[in-house]
Amino acid sequence: MNEREKIRDAFIEKSGWKGCVISTVAGDASFRSYHRLHHGDQTAILMDAPPEYEDTLPFIAIARHLDRLGFRAPAITHHDIEGGFLILEDFGDQLFKHAIAQAPDNEQNMYQGAIDLLVRLQSHPVPNNLPVFEHQPSHELPVYDHALLMRELFLFPNWYLGTGENKTTCPHQQDLSDLFSPLLQKLGKPETLVLRDFHAENLMCLDDGTLGLLDFQDAVHGHPAYDLVSLLQDARRDVSPDLEARMIDYYLDKTGHDRDAFVTHYNILGAQRNTKIIGIFSRLAKRDNKPNYLDMIPHVWGLLDRNLQHPALNDACEWFNKNRQPKA
Image (cartoon, rainbow, N blue to C red; front, top):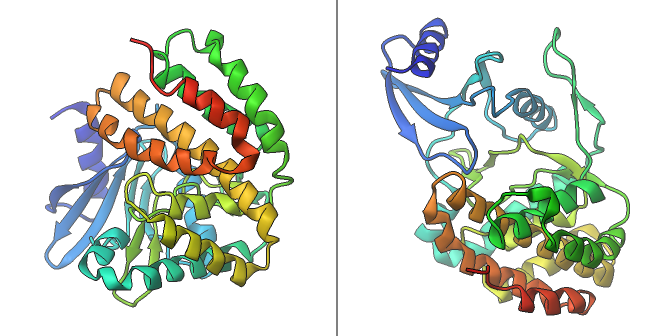
């Protein structure tokens, strides 16, 4: 047993779960890991977020904010901020994507339900600071501004086209900056809470018929199109172009956004997000020794190609066609 496991087990015991059976739950692309605690007929989820890499305070702040607004985020029953451990309500194993696989004829209705949730979430004002605990500083919600969007874009030249070394001098960074700076300026001011990873593996189908939310600790103040892109251009699940188009129409009918402007913004943010994801998946393979993510990159290229067909992205399309393959 290593030192981290000793700290974990002490936290579990202190939290009233002594003697529980621990099983591993599928993790995500971060340094966090998740475990299910079993004690009799009771279960809970342990989040292990090594503090040298992860901060649990944003998760707690966003979870409590979502709960105050009436959304289903996992209740946090115990926490060790310094150690990087949380015990969470167990939402079970019925992922949104699994529910669709079990009832494919219900796919459109399920996506409409997810969009209804998103529209409700976006109807609430976005606070600048979110309280955490009485003796902890509040969480300042980051703004999804030009600088952050551009830093994410640079993951593509740094890790997909390159090795991640000499990141500040990668020659393709200037190309992307020249291409995307005028595009990002079209987005205007941030309008809503953006969860950033609002997709079929972070939505849980709960027993009461509602959708539970996961993986929201990186939430920001940003553009309403971003989470719709996350949902309909899912890096881990194929959503047909026809369903995507119908769901964009459904969202626009619900919100009243100007169609032409919104679709332009949707494709700009889609291009930004999919470019970033190709960079992230490449980094996971090259830096973190997770080569399985390379198998997902062709699908994300397909999503990016959808975005690049929009007239606003003609110049970007030409650049990506020239830089589609990393140099050997």
